[in-house]
Image (cartoon, rainbow, N blue to C red):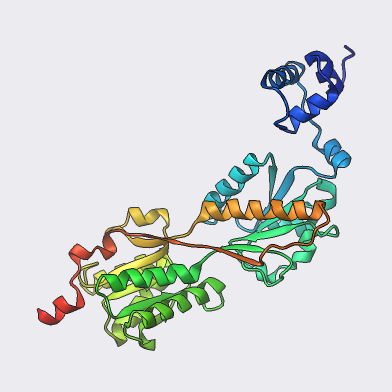
Amino acid sequence: MVQGRITIKDVAMKAGVSTATVSRVLNKSEKVHSRTRWRVERACAELGFSRDPIATALRTGRSNTVHLLIERFDGNFIPDILVGIEAKADAENYRVLVSKLDNAGRGIWEPGKQYIDGIIVISDAVHDLNLSEVAGQENLPLVCVYSYTQDIRYPCVLPDDYQGAYLAVQHLATRGCNDVGFISGPPDWPASEDRLRGYRQAVEDFGLREDPNLIEVGDWTVATGYEACLRLLERTSFDSIFAGNDSMAIGAIDALREHELRVPRDVAVIGFDNAALCRYVRPTLSSIAMPLKELGEVAMGTLLSLIDQRNNGQSSDTEHVLKLPCVLRKRDSTKVSEQLTIRDRKES
C-alpha cells in the first residue's frame, strides 16, 4: 500500500468489505453484523484510520459537532451541566467544542469556519446578548441553558425557580413555621423574581403570615445574607428563614448565632442551590437542589431536535422556555425533632 493518508477505501480493502459497509460502521448503524463490525474496527485500528470531520461535514452537510459557549468557567454549576451535555452528546455520537463566550466577538469563533451543527450558550447575562449574532449568518440552531432568553427563536432550559421556592416554604410550613423570613437575590435577576413569586404564593396557600417586613434583599453573597438577616432581626420577629441561595443562608445563620439564636431550635433555615458546602456547615443546611445534569441533557436533546428539524426543512415546534423541577434536600437546619413548633412556643 502506498504510504500517505489512510482512506475509507484502504479500510474496506483491509477488512474485506465494501466502502458502504465501512461507512455504516463509522456511522454506528445497527444494520451491520457484529463480526463484520469487529473486522472494520480492527482494520481502522491497525491502519490508524480516523475520519476527517471537515470532509464529512462537506459531504453530508452535518458535522455531528456542537459548540458550547460559556461566559464564566468558574461558575459553581458549570461542571454538572457539562456532565449532562456530554452524556447526551456521547449517546447521540456528537462532539462538543467548548469556548469562552466573549471569544466570539474577537473572531476566534466563527460558525461558518468550524463546521458545527448547533450552539449551546451558558451565560448569566444572556438577555444582554444579541443571540442572532451568536448564531451567525447561517442562523444555526441555538439553545441557552441556565439562562433566560427573550428571543423566542432560541429556546432556554431552566430550573423551575418558582416551584423550588414554593417547595422550600412548603417544607417550613410543614415544620410548624408561620413567620417565614425571605432573603431574595438581586431584583434584576429573573431567578430572584421567580423565587420571590414562589415564596409569596406558598405563604398565601399555607396561610402563613404575610408581611413585607419579612422580606429582605441580598446579592447572593454570604456577607449580604448576614446583613439582610441583621435587618430582619432589627425590625420584626420570625421563626424561619428561606434564603434565595445557600451562601446567603450561611450568612443568615452567622447573624442568628451572633444573636444567640440556635438553628433550627429557635429559627429554621433553608437555602437554594444545594451547593456542596451545605453538607459541611454546621448545622448541615437544608436546600433546594436544581437538576443541573438534567438541564444539560435536556439542552443537548433540544438542540439535536432543532438540528433535525432544520435538516428536514421543518419549522421548529420547540417551546421557548423549558423548566425542570427542583428537589428538596432535607438536612439538620430544618430538622423537626430539634425545632419547637409554633404551638410549643405559645404553650411554653
